[in-house]
Length: 489
Image 1 (cartoon, rainbow, N blue to C red):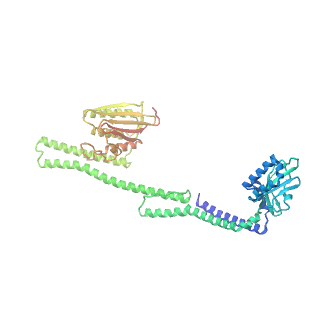
Image 2: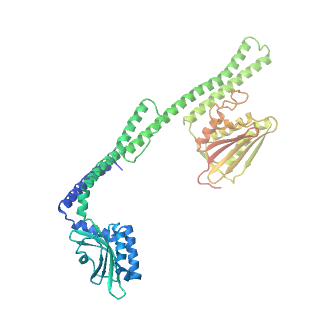
Image 3: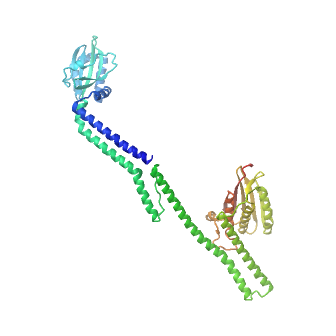
């Protein structure tokens, strides 16, 4: 609900309540001073026609009604009638019994000589046993039952209770009613004030306090939203801004940490081969390589270290371009089965020379069409296979590639029987420069960018990459690619 509508409703409510208060007060004073009850008396009568007696008085009437039905001549027994009349006096009611046109019994409670003339005529069908009547300004409510005595004479028993006229009631309650109306007006004002305050004054204070906290650099809080009006929309926009600022701040801090880690990792991975190269060059300069064989060995080592540095720089450059979305993907629709078979043929000779048993299994029906960048996907396959080779156990080495597919996705599994990856390291294997072996020994691992590049390539194809591993059993890497939309199984 908008603020305009709330203000409109608030002022309209105050106007309506004030008018009703004025009209009701004027009516009460008019009734109290003039006694003009005609319009109010009709309402009053309807109420007492339905409920003329108290609960106990109605119970006594039911007893008299039972006697009238079963032994009506008992209602000629005046001592019995006086006994019932005494019970009714406790309920501020009285008893009246008639036979034909004669009055058998009238309670002294009434003190009304014209009571007999005010009673309704006989109705042996008893279609209406409750009602009201007036004698002058006196108002009565009754419950009655008509019957026949044993000699055939018509009779009737009435339990009557006098009610105060509404004008008299108004005179008695006028001070209380006035105070109640004033109280209602005050409470209505307080409730409307509280409603308006809670609607937009309190949220505005919350916004001001939140702005102060943001100005102080505190973003670790949440602005509670409590309405759907303009203030609530402002709160929502403010909370969205706070979240974005918090996320931006967290990303900036994370980027700063990543930058420091990246510099430290690059420095370490470059310093190690540089130190080796420097040592071997000093050995040559100092004459340690004093034979052609030693000289060749030193030169080969220096070349190997320089090549590894060149590969590290190349991988770092590729990863940076992929991370910044500056490396274009040239997609081409191919059969993934053909691609994997070509890749396996290229891997076969390299793996065979390292005593690795290569297994290829296609569990999908051909063709499995996908849109890929051939060079980048091949780079991912090579990185995954190189990473698997580094951590294979001596002895029986196995490397498997399995293709599975459903109507929407194609999944390639790369499985090895290496040493496996600790469970606590699994969430980080695709992070740049991460190695499960913390010493960053180059003899047991590469640059730490191979799997990070594979993840960037998989995600660049709109796919995913994940890992499953158990220590001592091996590791499985899964690349999932979306199948081309115009081909099924």
